[in-house]
Image (cartoon, rainbow, N blue to C red; front, side):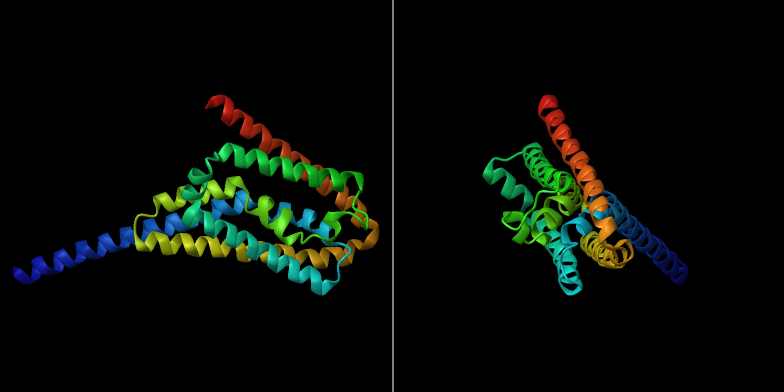
Length: 221
């Protein structure tokens, strides 16, 4: 009887462990998919192409890795200290979103009009930092989603799952941006201008949507 009772308790304990593991795995997958959709690596690829088309292959690879690294750094900082930073500066998520939208809108206008001559500050700027690393990849949406996931991570297993998801998303981002080098070789210089204009239009649409969402947040608040 005693041995049967012990084996029954072990079985129940094993089922409990499986439930914890399953829920942690589900949480990890949910975090990964959500961040991947929000950060949208395929959508960032044409914008990256238009910004680095005049760089060498080696520099493009460096910028691709730097953009993923900057995004990972920004997301990590806000995951750890996001609420403290925003409350200390008395900045709302909506204000952060509107600022990011305005910044992207300025860059999109440069891509659409073809301005970006030798004397332009953006010509010599590190595009891996702005606009790629932030606010395009690590934008308000990704930052808020990560902060919410941090709140849900109640145990060490969930925290490890969230860390895994964030790193995995940025590996996908790096691979997507690195693949743009192959695309650039195929389209050559003739297609770069077209890609730049399309990227500018997409970026403008993203920027306007960010601003609209921020305004809606202000009105609803």
